[in-house]
Structures are given as C-alpha cells and as structure tokens.
Image 1 (cartoon, rainbow, N blue to C red):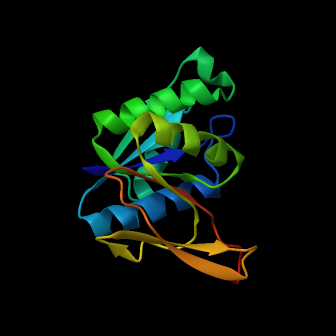
Image 2: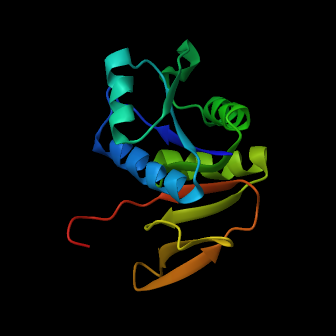
Length: 162
C-alpha cells in the first residue's frame, strides 16, 4: 500500500501547485503510515525531479515519451493506472484543475476506484476513509466516505486567507 501523487509540469518545470500536491500527499501518506511516490509525465530534468523529494516524496518516477507532448487523457490515464498498480497505491492524488477533472473519472474506471473530488483538507478519518469538501459554491461542506479499496482525491487548493 502506498500513496501516489501525479505532478504536472509546465515546459519541464514544476510550479507551486505541484509542490503543494506533494506536501498534501506526504501528509496523507503519514496518516496511512505508508510511502509516497510522485509521478511526473513528460520531459523534466533530473534536478527538477529531485525537488519533489524536498516536499516529502520518497520515490520519484518520470514517464517520458513523445506521445506525452500533449495531454491525451487515454495515454495519461494508462500511465497513471499502471504506476498505481505497480506501486500498489491505495490513494492517488491529483489536482482539481482542468487536467485533474479530466483524468479522475477515467482513472477511477480503470482502477475501480472511488473519487473524492474537490477535497480541501486532509482526510478526517482513515477508517472509514472520510474526506472534507466544499459544496454549493463554498456555502456548505460535505464529509464524503469513500468505501473502495483504491481512492482518488482531486485536491482543490484554497486561496490565500481561507
């Protein structure tokens, strides 16, 4: 059992978003008493990949192929799903941006996983696995229990001051 975080890169560089995802995933891994693997897809230099370790990733994997030069949901989903199986990931964390919203549903089908979308805090409970998310344009909140063995969380990062 491990935690897998998919980190996006822009022109071979990570932005604050990716580092925040790794930090969040690291905290989830600690709650589960397991390891964290970070996955990057596309061309990223070794020095840039090493930065992910500063935020809690014990293992950093990079998938690079010419077919990854543009976002192809099927290709990305296939790679993330294969790495998740190889790493025996029970939790997969991706951003709640357009990319994450596109990948999460198909990834859940490939892995037979439950999805907690727009999660904004660390899980409230591990057993049962319960996450917190805002609802109704942020005017309410929900506690979502994910009962599947594999869970996908899309992390909605909060704006400053929230």
